Image (cartoon, rainbow, N blue to C red; front, top):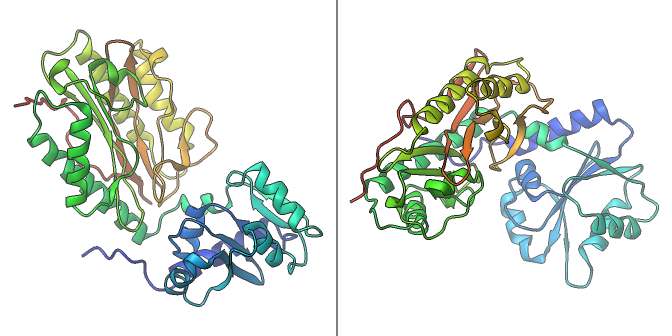
Length: 373
């Protein structure tokens, strides 16, 4: 049975890994201040919405407010905590902690606003504040066995909910109504809901890669693109896409579908440890370009998933990332023909020591043919 809680010592081990990275790459730093609530959760298990975490060779302290005092005690036993009251600002309480550090402190540049950074610099006068990028995200890119099990559970919940929702679809049902039923099906299967705002796109709507659901009816056009995922109670997610046929296939649809399907196969064929992920992107992109649809594929081939639906690494032509065992990524090439239809097929894939394993299992060789009641 899948255990939703990580093994004992997981969070302390993650903080130790971060300290080891700091010691190797940034030995002059006294500490790093973690601003991202997702990164704080990854390193401590704290699920609240307001916290910072200071990590260094001689310090590990979470900084939050009185709303979360009991939660921190329960979720982060043994972790030093500074709990502010309404009598001081978050910057002031953080500055008190920073003031005890003997040396410069780095702040997560991609997660702190310029205004907050300047406020913190003013409040912590005398403590040199630097910026860092991607320290925790790099650790998060490699999943441990427990994390992989949670993502597997998220994939299973998403696929089971999708199958159930399709079984009851009606031709007069709107995109929005279908998305509501799909979310209910996810919750019935243990998810807390969608991992992101879903895409349920009838016909021409599918030509917009980040379409918002609306009022078109499922039977209004011959195709239906659905991009969805499950978020589990422990925060881990899945991200899948299938393109269905709901009536008469539009002209050229079959050629586009077969091209995208072949692009998925091409990407999977080269995905293995040690391969630059720009080469995985190139494998998919080459298939689409050779078929004459290169200009209609404008996004990257994929991205990492974990506690966020878009996280490191990236599968794109400008990525510097290299595939490594433990990465869980999407492979999702697409072709989008404006005012006609779009086709995207998305799999969730684990990089293994031997190669890769596709975690998703919904059929994709042929587009599913949906016959709404």
